[in-house]
Amino acid sequence: MNNARWDRLLLNATLATFVGDMPYGLIEHAAIAMHHGRISWLDRMVDLPGDPAVLADTVQSLDGALVTPGLIDCHTHLVFGGDRAHEFDLRLNGASYEEIARAGGGIASSVMATRAASEEQLFAQSLPRAKALLADGVTTLEIKSGYGLELDSERRMLRVARRLGRELGITVRTSFLGLHAVPAEYRERRSEYVAMVGDEMLPALTADGLVDAVDAFCEGIGFSREETRRVFERAKQLDLPVKLHAEQLSDQDGAALVAEFGGLSADHLEHLSDSGIRAMAAAGTVAVLLPGAFYALRETKLPPLAALREQRVPIAIATDCNPGTSPLLSLRLAASMACTLFRLTPEEALRGITVNAARALGLEDRGTLAVGQRADLVAWHAKQPAELCYWIGGQLLRGVWVGGESVTA
Ligand code: DI6
Ligand code: FE
Image 1 (cartoon, rainbow, N blue to C red):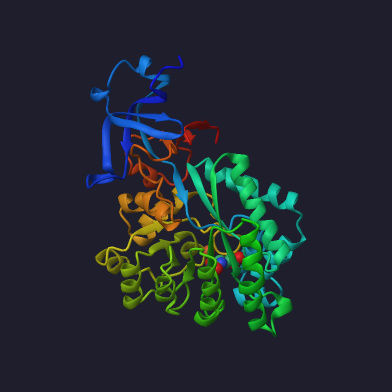
Image 2 (cartoon, rainbow, N blue to C red):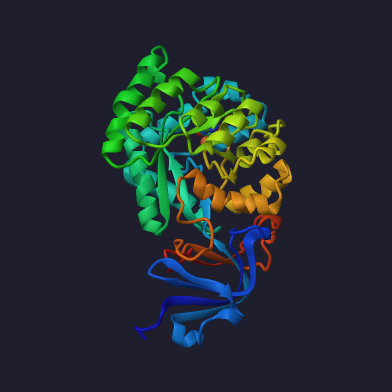
């Protein structure tokens, strides 16, 4: 039937649209149609403009199941060589993070393993992690570089990130994180390293078409505001948006810096100040909270949720999937942790992995269910949205559509 109005129609769904002021933008007893990769119609079943079998080529009933936008993990370091399970073991047997780092562990050990891995090996090691996120409903995924810290290895990481997107049929957005750590060979020459990141690596990787945004780790043990600013200036010249690891372990006033550049997001933010919040609110910079790192590091200082709410800063949640501080492979679990550890409401947490996560990546065509949006959506073995944060672990996925096509997770 080639003359049907729509490619596909899902019936008897509960839609969490995240549009409008109703809780979750919920529409019960609803249907949703997709055509040419976009959402072409959605409303209550009783308002369907005709016989479903005539309206669409493919019709499927969901028996009242919950449907949400495809989930968006807007902050990961998912591509890396090796793992750090051994350090986890050492830490729980009494070794400190500093001792491990001094013995060549920490980020340096992931850099060594990543540099040593071929593109093929890096892809093979990263693929199961990306698949785990997809199996939990993620259809858009941000992946950072930052374990190469030299041009060829950073390029390899970003190429692997892009290939994961192609292979799994999901969207991958890449961020260049040259300012993640000073590599050992530059320890005595850090200003040379910062200059190389801005003047050589960033322009070269941008010319290769591998960079969607620029990130940095602005921290006492990372890079200063001035060093970060230097690379952000280059990003601006290249017309690339910026985001920042800010205020994770201490207040460096990084949030105000990224806001000054009109940044997409400031991420972590446990030590965020009132002035940082005001700067973010004025610039429309999204606050990305990362409860996986908070949990794994057994942090106790909470991000300033009340003030973020009061200033109406949009809040997103991400896994921060990385081998050191957040080996977390479920975005739904990150949302659950955001509720239990940070006290977000389930609606805030779910907006944080849909509509606000899209905003943190500068993507306006997804994160909500509305006519014209990309047809990235997930059907769940759940009836109500809060279940997605309420169940801790488990497999709730019932179906995934990316750009209107059914994908096997
Ligand atoms: N903040 C983090 O928590 C991770 N990177 C960053 O900038 C840690 C990465 C690691 O330990 O490998
Ligand atoms: Fe991170």
